[in-house]
Amino acid sequence: MTQAAEQLVQVSTAAGVTTITLDSPRNRNALSTALMAQLLDALAAAVADDAVRVVVLAHTGPVFCSGADLKETAAAYAGGTVPAGALGEVLAAIWECPKPVLAQVGGPARAGGLGLIAAADVAVCASTATFAFTEVRIGVIPAVISGTVLRRLTPRAAAELYLTGEIFDGARAAQIGLVTAAVPAAELTGTVRRYCAALVRGAPGALAGTKELLRRPAGADLRTELAELSALSTGYFHSEEGREGVLAFREKRSPRWVTDPE
Image (cartoon, rainbow, N blue to C red; front, side):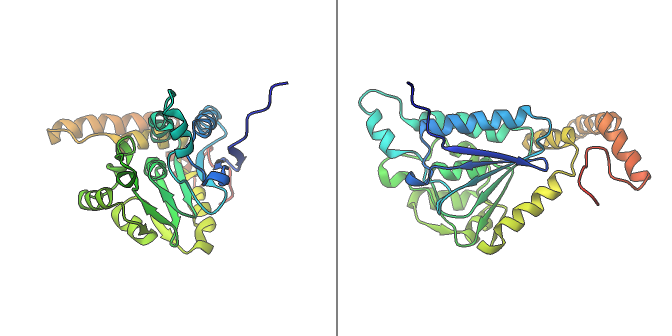
């Protein structure tokens, strides 16, 4: 009889919000190959489900994510592939998810865990959470996570924290752009719920389009860029969602995609 794979990621859905929970506290939610595969599956399922409007990335145990699974990495030196090689696919899946992704960080995050946080659209941490880019201290570099992290951090902060590997707190994480907000631990869940309540009021297509807009590089010529953006804006006003949203506003009611009471 084949032994069932250990479940390292838990998924629950309520009121349009899917919560994907890293559930490997025995190794501080390290990014093992198995955990990342399950995380990718959970993300794909959330994207495919039209009832899901928002994705929350949470964790069990006191640690959000300790980074790469170094035990698995050491074993892979005998001829396997180190788990860090799969992290890029996970970061891309979070970054490119057409639905808003919110990271709920209640405890420490290190190395690759910071890549997950930076990939999310909104990240809220407990003020007591701590962070560090510890790669240089074990002889490697924060390469793959830079794809998301360097899009968030200020250049000076990135240089300091990448090179020193020093620990910093939630307030600093918010100051440099790694997280959206740092709140007292007792307020973390409530803050995440408020963000989710705001996000589910957005039209699904408009939210996906806005995420693409946020990733859009600035054009070299402003007038050309504004002409392209004007056409994009007009297209959304003429879309089914745009027409419904304008009509709902005029009729002083919620648009059809909003299911929660006013």
